[in-house]
Image (cartoon, rainbow, N blue to C red):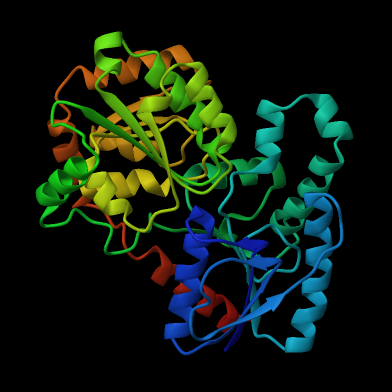
Length: 374
């Protein structure tokens, strides 16, 4: 089949972008002709993928979203596709990958009535979301968590049969290396980190949403003796200036390192002692599953869709919502005062019993089934 995939922006190291590329690659491997529609593409273009850049002139992001949506429908007709799969909320999709939480729910629980009534940004994105989830639409929806399904049905009355829950999905090479202890020793020695020191790791692009400021504040709040032997490495792509400034203001700038986007996340996890992920809003938090697969304990916020896996495994702690910085500070100190090895072992044991590797194959199955039925 000739398949169209739509995503506003593609860049390496984004969570949604990673799912997008793996599903697209799976469809290419199955012999489908793939066309990608996007406003921008950063990084290498894999073989078998044809890129169609859609230029937008609007000044606001929500204006660009509408313009992209309108142009996409015209271009898809010209390209004579068998179907369109979207990774952002766009009307007229055959399949939508729900990589974000319900916008309407977030607006009700976290925004004022004035915002919902007057914000052009909210009104625009809300209309785009409604076009995907309205009862009269026929878009099939690939879900990442059960919570998403509950929220979308609550706000839009979407028929249950249109939802397809996918398992967690990480690349098959994101598992604990057989030589993890050697990797740990090498990375720590190369960065002058002693075995009596503690290395915290945070992974994810979009530092505000991921709660990087929360992590820096929690580091600074540690008791002095504990803080002096603790470091924080932050992996991801974003503007780091305000966070560097915050670390300097809190006198921990010498202990906070921004590594940028990295391909060796599994190795970095092998070297770390704890994954920090106090996200403000996180549909899933695939990095939590990656940490469990490596045997790295986790401290995350309850806003993460996959926080339940941390609770079920016993491989770390989840701070409750609504978020409290003091709760995070206290929990981090308590975890670091104790031996973390047992928590890592629990994560490895738990992950060996669940399906975490074939999300993208299942997504491709559903795409094929949907378009064959059409």
